[in-house]
Image 1 (cartoon, rainbow, N blue to C red):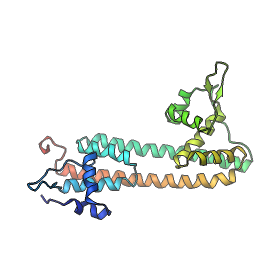
Image 2 (cartoon, helix red, strand yellow; image 1 turned 90 degrees about the vertical axis):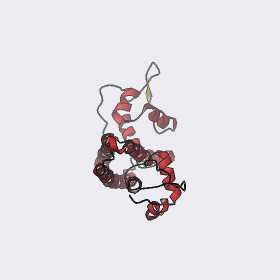
Image 3 (cartoon, one colour; image 1 turned 135 degrees about the vertical axis):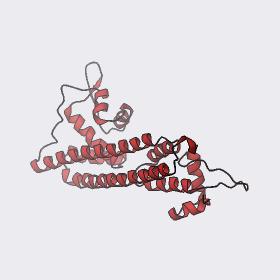
Image 4 (cartoon, rainbow, N blue to C red; image 1 turned 45 degrees about the vertical axis):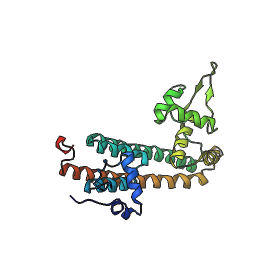
Length: 243
């Protein structure tokens, strides 16, 4: 089997050989044995792992790629593929939610009305809002601390949410997904409150396009993972005898 120098693997990505060693430390690629000269002996397996990792970062975050690649390194390909599918499903879910928010704003613009309220049965709690938005309660509390919204309070001083506030939280989620900072979010929300939708819509429309592009990149990244798994299956990497 051919032995590669680190730079031979990383050069096509304009990266130094040091990055390959870091990937090995982080668990992105299997540990490389050392030769008599104490240099790492990288093989086609290491090359394929590194290439797949770099390609997958076009569609997934560094953290997501790390989780998947470590599973493959540890020979749990089924878990890695399932995780990739889950990440992709989350992208699609966020895209659908964002599209609904945009449709509401467009409808409000055409009718000169406020955003239609999400239907809720009475008032809902932080826990229920967290479930509906698929966000941790800690995130909601940070948003409130950053004055992106103000929850209503009952006689017992407990916070609760109505339909109008839930709609606002969906919009905040979209804005945060778009990469906006808290100051930008506050400006956009201020515009929405004053029915300044014409300035807000282009921002959200661009984000919808970006999210659709991210979904396509995610599919390509999933393809890179499948190609790596197919190669590893062909050399029996996942079999007991390969250990």
